[in-house]
Amino acid sequence: MSEAVRKIRPIPLTKDNWDPFGWLPVADTDRDDGVERLDFAWNDVHVNRIAHRRDEVPQVVGGLRCQVLYHHVTHTQVLMPLDAIAVVAVAPPGLDMTSPSDIDQVRAFVLEPLSSIVLRRATWHWGPFPVTADAVELFNIQGRRYLEDNASVDLEALGRPLDVLL
Image 1: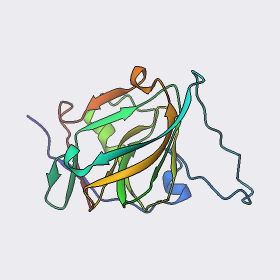
Image 2 (image 1 turned 135 degrees about the vertical axis):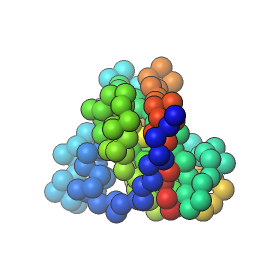
Image 3 (image 1 turned 90 degrees about the vertical axis):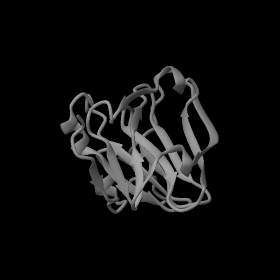
Image 4 (image 1 turned 60 degrees about the horizontal axis):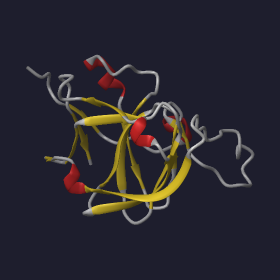
């Protein structure tokens, strides 16, 4: 039998709040520009556009159900919604995601169009999914061979489904 569904609300997307999961790109005039670097162990950096639809995930009263988290241990990933407000859920890269208590470390963030995030290698993530639109188009930088490095965890099988309230 599953534990009660965990419900979370997005927290503000700030440098400090995002730090456990990655970093927020800064202007080229910012003294911190270049401090953090993208990392691609397989030297397969790839840029493209991807999309996520709202109907890819179950809708629940007041939000969306996060059923699966993914992570890529060989590369960082950059995501930027281009045309719609989106929500992303993340968990720190060091988690094994084998215990329901790991789910307590998942956080959610709302991403405005043209706001970009960088996921550290092995950061667990879900989305970004559109908040109100039917779909969101995303600018994406990740490893070309990501399908070979796309581990996942089924939160419902773990006994701790997660609802992201919007």
